[in-house]
Image (tube, rainbow, N blue to C red; front, side):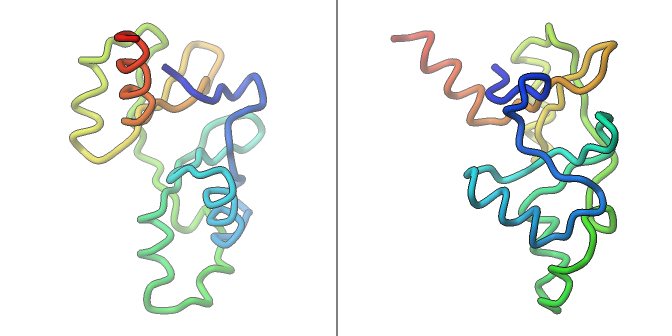
Length: 123
């Protein structure tokens, strides 16, 4: 169900020192609403549209702030073999599932990823 795998280079990511405007532009260009924050191939957080909006709504100059100041570091991780039922409580908290194994970050699973997976099963 992972649409973009980190090891394959297809995951859209940002670094903690990137600015919020850089994160926003990556999200917009690649039509994603959240991106993992990676440092030295290690997942250190995640930032989404809501995080950026809350940071800049009162002061647009905050678009120049580093991602590290506004990213979420409390992450919901699941193993590679997680079942769809394991993902639903994460989605209910308005979060994405972060897939990791003993080697590290593999990718994200979003609601749309699960919907696409289920849709493909009926075709």
